Image (cartoon, rainbow, N blue to C red):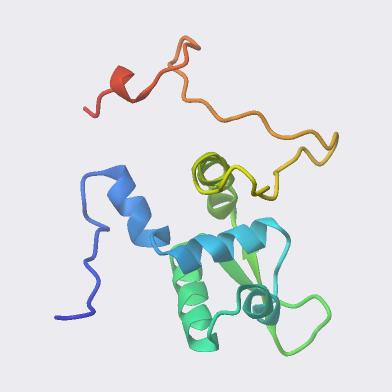
Length: 146
């Protein structure tokens, strides 16, 4: 079926299952906006410029997968707010890794990307590193999938 996405939620690879939940760019950008503090549908729509039907679909999937929760707005308005769950907040490491990769590889030398900084001190974040159990920094040739 053309346009039908393959379902990866029974795959034996953790990365494939993760991509089944958050594997399109709109879902990742919605999570980014939620990490920045956006909560309301219209805030997501305005910041992303995303068609309302696509935004509604992605939010519904993120809620169904437990990445976000739809809760009543605290001001008792007729709308909902979308909050990251603990599962959604755990994506911040992935988001920082993706952001840092983009900073290093997707800008021309004369372009200056937005920098992620530590809220408490205003200092740029250190690059993320993958470490072995004993604390050694490991690269792609130093690991196996078993």
